[in-house]
Image (cartoon, rainbow, N blue to C red; front, side, top):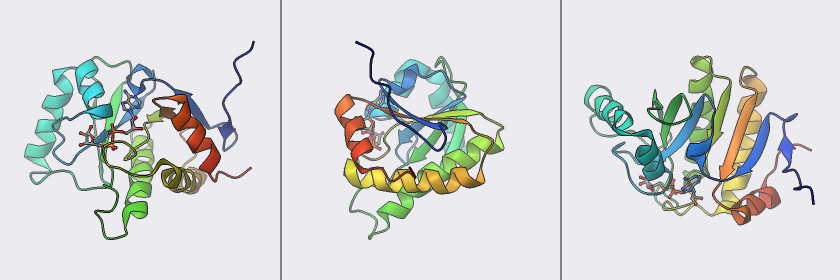
Length: 186
Ligand code: APR
C-alpha cells in the first residue's frame, strides 16, 4: 500500500517528515539548543553526537567572542555541520513554556523567523527544523503548531529565496498533532 504522502504547505515549500533531524541532507538543520550552546539532550545531544567536536568548538568560540552570557532566547547563530550530512547548523534557543512572562509565543516565532532570515542571509536554499521547545522546554505541541505555521507563513511570504523548508518530527503522533493544529493557508 502506497505510503500516504504527508501534506505540503505554502505551494509545497514546507514539507513534514518523521525521523531523526540529523539525517536530513539540507543546507542547514536547526538545533533546539539552550543558552549555554554547550550541548544537552534531545535534538541538541543528537546533533553534537553525530556532528562531532567541531560543532562544540565553534559554539565555544561563539560564547567567547559574541555571547559571553549565553545566547538569548529567540536568537540564532550558525556553525558548520561537522560530520553531519547538513552543511550548517543554525543554533537557536526556544522559550521554556511558562518562563517568559507570557511572551513564549513571540519568542518561539522569533526562533523560526530568525533562523529563516539567517539562512537566507547565507544564501542557503534548504532548512530543516525540529519541533523547537516541545520537548524538555515543555511547550504544548498543539499551541506550538499554531505559532510555527503562522510565523513561517509570514516570513516565507517575504523571504522567497528558500524553497525547501522541512519540519521534522521525532514520531508520527507528533506530526499528526501538528497537522491537526497548524494554521497554514489552504
Ligand atoms: N530528531 C528530531 N526530533 C527530535 C530528535 C531528533 N534526533 N530528538 C528529539 N526530538 C524532538 C523531541 O521529541 C521534541 O519533540 O525534538 C523536539 C524538541 O525537544 P528537545 O530536543 O527536548 O528540545 P527543547 O524542548 O527545545 O528543549 C531544549 O533540551 O536538549 C536540551 O540542550 C537542550 O536544554 C535544551 C533543551
